[in-house]
Image 1 (cartoon, rainbow, N blue to C red):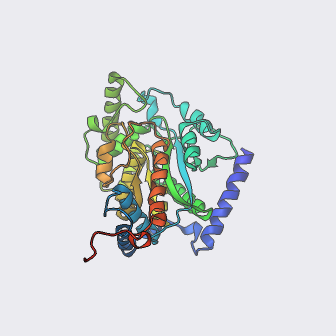
Image 2 (cartoon, rainbow, N blue to C red; image 1 turned 90 degrees about the horizontal axis):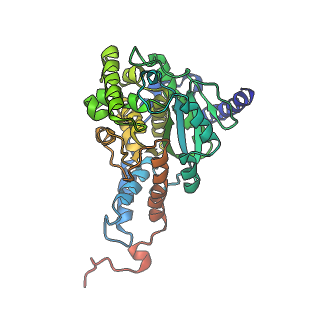
Image 3 (cartoon, helix red, strand yellow; image 1 turned 30 degrees about the horizontal axis):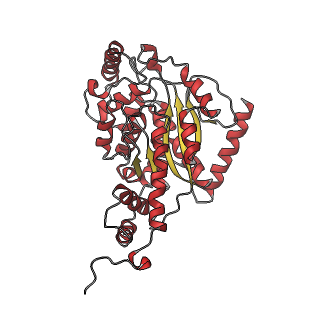
Length: 380
């Protein structure tokens, strides 16, 4: 574990230097302070971007969602023609104790195996990230194994969650600590020049936790919230739904307490992604939401900090049952419909080029005046 510890100390030093240079007391940074530091979009820049878009050589609004994204980015960054910086998909990894109930088609051992696959560049998210020019940041926040790799961000809060069908998945303090892992990691990456983030995850059993979150915070019945995840058959799906019902009965999570919901029926990687989303909003950076699990994290972030939703961009509509309901609860509309359900951040990474395209249109497209093109409104 020596290399990992040295590597992590170096990264923590970078983070501390970044925060201290901006007057942030790293030791005393709290979740409440992070939430209170999230501000509304710059509406003046949103309006300026809208006016600029209407002056470009096209019918008003004809570029549809690209124009909406361009205006959102202007409000996020406070610039009509924003610089987004480097791109990163943050893949949080953690194990789930509920796997002992047999809710997945794959054993829990797959989680650490896939983490090593990410680190060796062999997973789908690695391929798509290379294709789109993004970096994969792989974080061990709760894998139930010892992992060692020079590129691993080792931020383990605990070795997997407890079985939520028998009691809370983790303590409230552990959930908050996991959220702060994501917050602090974003601050560190912002200090390294990253400004466009995507959410990714790995954790066998995490669709079970995400469905439980949807059932509580979205008021969905368990049958509509819980899908097939890794591809389970009808019998196992019914068993999975029964396990979720038992977890809700045992823990009695309160929808008015999103952090408590996260602690009782969530996951460490989900908590880490909550922090990534809140951290991105705190630093006025756009964050691209991936599929079902990432959207469960986004719903918790939205309930903790409603202003954070303005910084979210939904990438795609997953095939996983319940994803559309999650997006509806948050108020997000997906950019893509690709019938994907892999997770890892794969859908979010695919949205990066569209987001960059929106910025390029604002920066590079000619106005009617520049091109000498008639707007059709001139007097004759």
